[in-house]
Length: 111
Length: 112
Image (cartoon, rainbow over all chains, first blue to last red):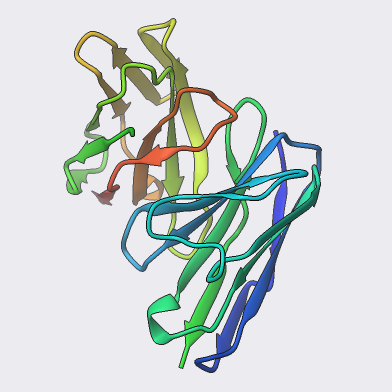
């Protein structure tokens, strides 16, 4: 299994600013993913973080808004740029070779 | 792409009863189906999974069945306990290490 940590666990930000969320895995994993979860809703995939190449974004998500880095096989970051209140959500990363394990999430509130 | 439908959206049972949650998927290439339990404010936790080469898998009080022909899979929880109360998500993917497509979730409430 993989143990995944994220930071920050929560943040309150002003509109127009940016926040970078970090995700650390305790073992090397080929693929890492970033999801968004609105309160009371399911998980929606934002993008696949590829090591050594640009992230692959799902429909409705763009690199300018959600830039992602993947410098190695155990770490990734997601930046939420130029935030608006609509970006308030929980952001989760996941990774794993034989199944997907999730980080604890980052609860973001944009005022 | 893959589409996963999950039913029911809410389920209330008496302690000791069984609970069944059903999911359907659209992509015949999907071959890995995990189930996650998410308690309030916590991360999704994997509780059981099944691969397309088996039809059923059991782990104590929980079991999952898979019907590849009909493209549906189900979670069965027997002898439910109040601590089973949570939101359960099914998911599907064509590779266990690949991205997951989630169902909409089922809020299970077990009444003591």
